[in-house]
Image 1: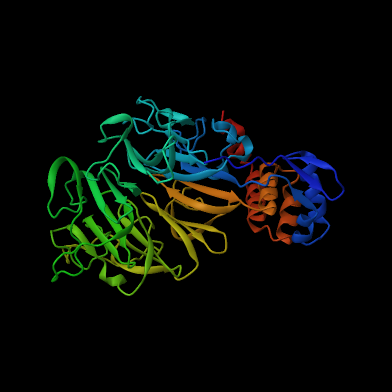
Image 2: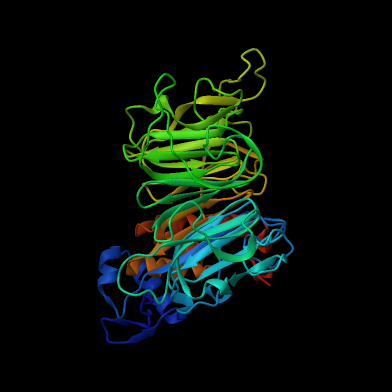
Length: 508
């Protein structure tokens, strides 16, 4: 896959050549924006040569192991500051693009548009894929996959899995294969893994839990491997010890009906539970359900469900995406409604401190749980991601909202320990393409696909205390809402004497 062309120069109507990122270019845009011209009129005066797509990676939250990509000593970072392209060894420099990102318990992985995979953070079990067990506070390319074009990545608690195609493949037929490494995966280097699939199976998606992994084929088949003490492998029984891969062969519609084969379209692993969406938009869950995270009124095996079982409370609602956290689950419908269920002790359901009660033992309910899906946001949700104890959602209006455990700032702008309701995260510029949430940190990929967005990216990188007010003013008057909010938040932090949170010392 060829790299996106570089954004070399911008030519103004007056025929002046303005190098990308130059102070003169930024000043010129500011001058025109501040002249109360319409944003479309401003941009019509510029012609972009070799117009690219540019991406940015924002990571924030718990930073004990360097999972936010900074090399500082701070234990947490409440501000989603974009990672500098100079931290990565891929081509494209300041115009590098990103395809995917994932957060594990204390490590992070990102896929560049040239198919390179980068990892950073904790490495106690070899989850960074460099063959060692030494962590890294800077992103490092996974060199063992340089012969592969990585398409997507998933981080578990202490393992990582990626889907990739050989760079030297013959013909145009897709050969998306699965690579795994880290805890319970048999190697600290990426190794090709077929498991219960045939070698020519096209892998569509992979998701990693705490101690189990589930992979989805293009044909809609699931295979699962790892530990199965809570039935998270969907085999109809529990067992001790590490289990090899098997295809999940039965899905239960209702308790009084025989299991059947279902074609699966999307999957997500929680800590000890799993969820999947069928081709008809129906949600199936299995594994540990002691906190209500499976969405069933009652469970068949104590606090567990041993084979995939349909969440009947969502019947008649077409679900297009499901996300599992530590002990909670979210479902996003085709119409943009968000449902949640499971444990809500720290606000991860977004329903406030009173969420109702549920227990497998009806008279012993003393925790805030909800075992039946309930509507959290009725419309407008585009993307959702669940961390261990927090949730992120990207809205149609371009804003990110988070809720749940917020001790490290991973869920909201507020400094509160718990964000009980959806709260704004106002630090990101560009169109959000991917959300990711881990043990205590969060990550976002944003894209700039127009000249207006590229200008916003450049201006965001150049904001300082002296020009923040001007940029905020003109951005708000020209429809650059995300940039205006960013400037507002930055000025608030600076005026509060907390500028140190934003300095490059975090990166050095």
